[in-house]
Amino acid sequence: MLFRRDREQDPRVLKDPHRLPPGQVLTQKWPVLSYGSPPQYDMTRWRLRLYGEVDAPATLTWNEVRTLPSTTVTADMHCVTTWSRLDNSWEGVAFKDLVALVNPRSTAQYVIAHCDADYTTSLPVEMLADDDVLIAYRHDGTELTPDHGGPLRLVVPKRYAWKSAKWLEALEWVVHDRLGFWERNGYNNSADPWKEERYW
Ligand SMILES: Nc1nc2c(c(=O)[nH]1)N[C@H]1C(S)=C(S)[C@@H](COP(=O)(O)O)O[C@H]1N2
Ligand SMILES: [Mo]
Image (spheres, rainbow, N blue to C red):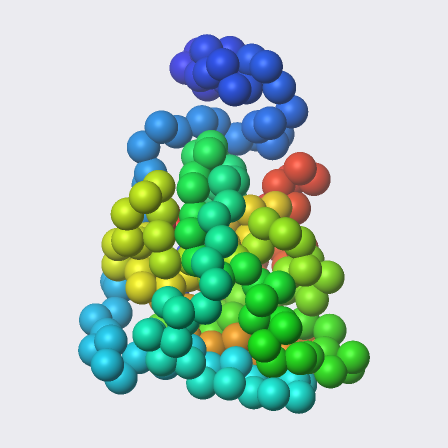
């Protein structure tokens, strides 16, 4: 069985069998998984909007995003369709730094990520407070390609990858959660790979 051999052969999983969540298979390649095709942006007009239940809403140009202090996170990626890719190096802006910038109100409980073509996903603010959450513009040392969410995507390593929204255009802090694109279409809203929270 290829599946078992894969698990057993990779030294990272050999060392730590729990590294791979239940039901996942390792891939060395990086599959593209998108609903629809990548947008073509004019980067002089591109903006990242940070708004909602925050004291200091902001609209950032591409230059401003790239001028914010950058951070690099090495993290695994788990797609609900069962592939996992280990040790992705993501470079971008730590989510914590965005929080410091806009100062969310205590009433804000969730963040809605708004993307091209009305793709959205949402996460509780506590989950986004993790050190490994960022908005990323580079992957494994090169600029994020359009297929993989370039120019900018959200990265939330501890959740199934549909929460890592590609072509990010806005982050909205809200009081009440609103189900995202996949979450309305059968995916679990919590999306914890270790608990196999795949569908509802
Ligand atoms: N905007 C947007 N973001 C998205 C998706 C999408 O269809 N649209 N697909 C999600 C899913 S299901 C996965 S597995 C990952 C895949 O990222 P990749 O194509 O870079 O591997 O992106 C997620 N982010
Ligand atoms: Mo996915």
